[in-house]
Image (cartoon, rainbow, N blue to C red):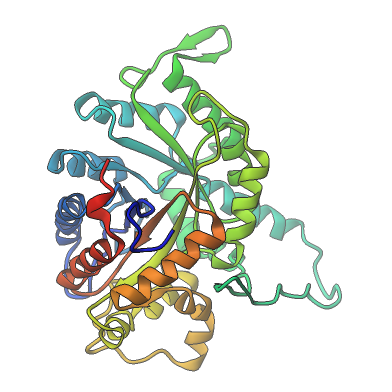
Length: 387
């Protein structure tokens, strides 16, 4: 496949509804809806929205925003990327998406993630770890390039998952003392409710609405761990997050394919791979527009959470110390002219064997964000790939 082939690989949008410096959450919501309308016209297959809480993004009430986007568009698939199952019950998820499907049938993608469970596991592992000197730390996996695709050294996420903001967020979103279900069990319960009933003891429960809703279920993952394994075992499509954890994308895809079992939903593995992109008319303009991406990621990785996206015309450059925290993400962001970015996306698709790519593109100015998606759609040839 090449970016200019007659049948380009499907391309979709992952939107974070970012709040720009000097803007408001309300504007972020309206801009996401406007972007979805434009993306539909440019030929993108799906429009997914990310769930984040108590930070500067407008998609915290993801199902609500999905409904608003579905109402403002006509045919593009709309979904979650991804529902954080640590903060929701299986019933609340199925009922919410079933309600939207009742009005916009056959257009919803229900993406599922295990963010809450990851934090619980990380804190438990830290508590159980030996205290005091225990010898040299394990050697980091070396950076490598596989057939043109950069796989940097893995970033250690434990510090983020134990940050005060994450802990406070969990406390605000979960009932005190509530036990989080195992991710595999939560996914199984969601599938049961969609398929016709969840048995709890001697009682069979039916989601109203939700049962038999025409909703596609997806699993999102960043490693070869439980998410990839559950997606494969349940016969569900899988999204590998290169834009979040570029070092582990290949192992995530390999684990999914190794564990895949055909299901009524999917007869063979289906892999979507994500990428962070900024596209402009030329490489230098795109580089300038993307110059505050590192600041945004640095806030996330140092426990502050996503802050308002800075204006590249006025933001001070990252220090060397700050740059070191986010270097892997900066170097794996695809930035440049349409042909530059399309070539790098083509490499990502080829090396991972992706069936589809999903891109996220964040800039301070909304017009630049729109233009980034538009230029890439034209270069990729999406107008010929609408289904």
